[in-house]
Image (cartoon, rainbow, N blue to C red; front, side, top):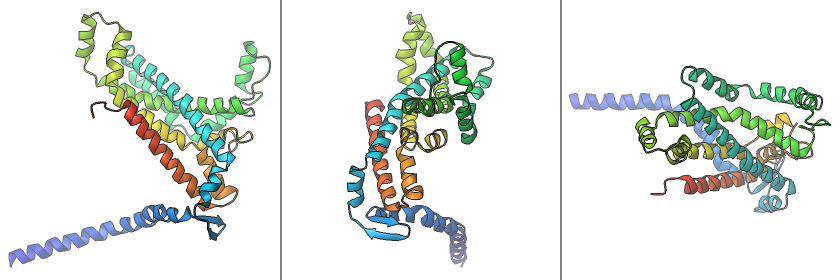
Length: 298
């Protein structure tokens, strides 16, 4: 009798548990699982508002002939190839400086360098636009220092607009990666450095022979997450350069997908196709990085 009561009690608890979990599972299925599977159907369709037409692989053919998409994709790769190495390099320098030179106010400097990461995107974008406009503070300062004779079109020239976005990204995310590098450096046993110093290794030799190899997993993490973020770059070109301008010179794939889905054509099928292509590209880039920087013993 006691066994039956325990069995009923456990079944009752299971029902209570499922009663609490079921609403979350329903919402997760409706807003996460279902959209993912339905987007596979959307890839084969052409949308005009709520009107849908089956096109098979037509969206992929359209993508292959879409010059703006390839231009936007090239911008993503430009930002990835230039901005990410620069950001990681600066983050390593700052982390090394804080780890070796700063003792008393390390927490204060760490907070100062990390603050841009938590700064409002709209606020700092507006600030950058004010500072970098034609008659802005930055151009006036460069003219006063006699470094330029004419104002630089930071937001109106295609080349300088890309530079502006890279500066903004580097300013915002360098401190974020610096914190990871600093934590990684602080977890390295000091006895390794002491032994290297006894053997006559300089600080530069210690950095390249000890710090960098032991910091490889953290660098890999930063490289993969930064690459993934760059392939999804949307906010900076949308706000800083007024939607990827001038003349699509700062257009990114994420911004282009948004325009196709909600601004220009409302073609959700084509937007879904581009999204899946970007997922595949991001996965391939992560795989390459893991192969190049991952554990060689595996």
